[in-house]
Every structure is written in C-alpha cells, then in structure tokens.
Length: 137
Image 1 (cartoon, rainbow, N blue to C red):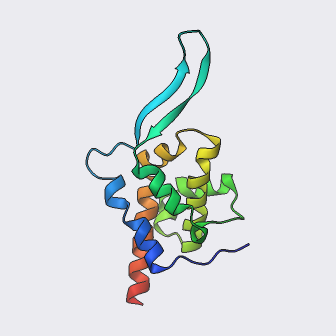
Image 2 (cartoon, rainbow, N blue to C red):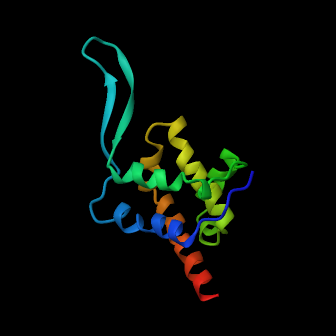
C-alpha cells in the first residue's frame, strides 16, 4: 500500500519543529520514571517527554509520511548512513520517518534517542532541501 506524498503544508508542519527540537537547551526527555521501588519490585523505566516530542511524532505519523512496506533493519541502516540521508529521496525519508515513529512501540526512549543523536535533524534538513528544490524547479 502506497501513501500519498505530503503536501507543502504537511512538509512545512514537520519543518516547523526543526528549530524547536534543536533550539539551545532543548532536552527531549524531561525525566525517566520507573525502576526499583521501595518494596523491592521493579518496573521498566519510561521517559517523560517534553511536550514537543509527541507533537512532532504525531505529525510524522500522518498517513502521508508512512511507509507500510518498510523493513526495520533496512530503515535503521539507511538512517545511520549520514551520506545517504543527505541524498535521500522523499520515499526514503518516509521509510526512515516510519522507523523513527514506530520505534517507540518497541523501545521506550526511542523518540528521545532519534532526536538526541541528530537523526531527526538530518531528516528534516534533507526534507527542507527537497522542498526548496521542488519550489525552484
């Protein structure tokens, strides 16, 4: 199943998060909760995200950004390859964004890691270039 390409407005919506997620002093995870309790029981830790984080990932989870055929391992390899990200097509960006969005289901803190390690920054920077090139074409 293929999804429609994002509109200029949907691209602008995602790009609007770039200066906010990477502004001076921004920290995606406010606090971690869970772990050992006084009674000796343990709970798995989970992050309390800054409110911008779930807002961004909700926007990135829109139908136009989904890749239903993505392969998790391949998407991670693409995301980890910075030269590839700098040349990525819109379809590749959709694949990598799908990985970024869905990863939180499998690993608490994934969203924070995607931001902190600069993966979201690089995807948004590439998206901005694609949008600029489309506007000039």
